[in-house]
Length: 315
Length: 255
Image 1 (cartoon, helix red, strand yellow):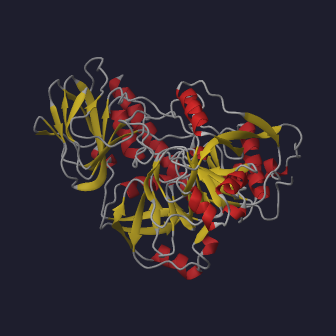
Image 2 (spheres, rainbow over the protein chains, first blue to last red; image 1 turned 120 degrees about the horizontal axis):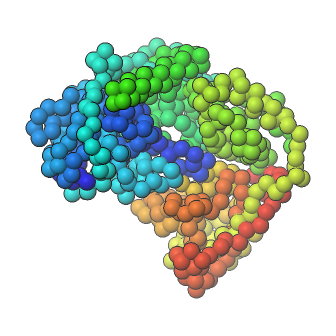
Image 3 (cartoon, chains in turn orange, yellow; image 1 turned 60 degrees about the vertical axis):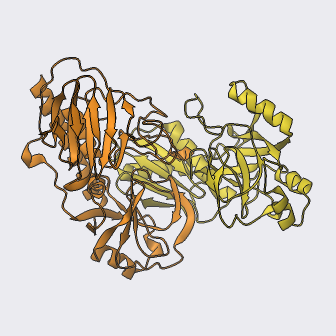
């Protein structure tokens, strides 16, 4: 197990999400950056679905009472093991009694700590993800606090430490372009409003969390009233309330909502949204269904490549 | 019930979801089409369809586009919508009885709702238990039902400032809607009573008391009965009273 000496800014247990219960109003939760979670799991010798710690802006300080094997990924949080720097996007052994400390992010927003064997908190509705609003999953449905004891699995034996090759490392610039598919309710906006959304930069405000990102920038004009009869919402949905300023939904987005939705950020680009923070600039570019599906295919191929490379190296 | 209407639209929600929209209003007949399509897709269990989310007037379908293309999914939906009607073939939804202790500590706003609508408290209770309510959809928090069918004579505006905590099981009114809080949460609804039933039990085999498309019937219980049922629920010995309803959206009128 490991003891939380300092919790960091917002650290929670997340896996690939609580799927299958949206029809009952249950938010999926899950890692905001599924690519970083998947890669950390693969480097740690886990299936992609294992639960890990998601750390936001500033990471925790943890004391391990027994040996563990870990991997880190995502935002650069200057990890140190007993004071020695640890490379991001790599796996490493943690000896008993060691302290693993993270600091502020120097690039990106969310980092992941995967432990070999996962984080064995109980599953709730099929997932270990923390649903912070409904208080489900993770550690009693909440973020981690100082003094918490996080269960860690026993390591079977020595494991090969691995690192992602430099050319495969994602980068997190402060200006990004997210691909969107227009719809579902684009007819509720004027042509000018849609052109504004696709042509102008937006800035991430401080009102950003796992639920959604409120953006600031040129107002998007509605053709009619901004409110609709509530319908279903999914991560990536771009809601535009009466203010004309877009809100891009994240992993903790509620299952239903009543604002008109102009576009949807494609799944493979949600990891870049997850790594943006207040002050960053986002531009939106329209893409076709075929382009979005191709991007998803490339994302899955990336996982397969890493999985088979890890398998070959570990034998 | 013809599912394939000229008003039916299939709208894109990113590469892994689409929404099938049957209309733009809150209408039990439109909602019945949503639930019928959800049921047909669930029964057919097509590879690549991951989950569906019924709402008032549309169904969101999540799918894996590397297993099932959008074009193929649209064809499946179109043929599901034009499949022959099996209106009498099976019971489509369930009526669940929700016992409620009205007034007093259970419903601190009962007197306000009565006064606002120029009714006696007894009349409010009688109207609230008079007709079944359709669960149009679930959302907001796990297991929270968006209900239709409450008598318009009970419509009452929300509290001006919401309460910090509302106990789980609270039954309230907001505008023309009535609802139940499945878990303790802040809220601005006028509270008229409380049910001792647990609407959301994450670790149970059946985590939810009802599904979207079901009907609820509020029934009046005393404070003593509330305590009894509450104890039975806590001990896992209470079975809610249910009966099947034939398919169709004409049990209640609009919200």
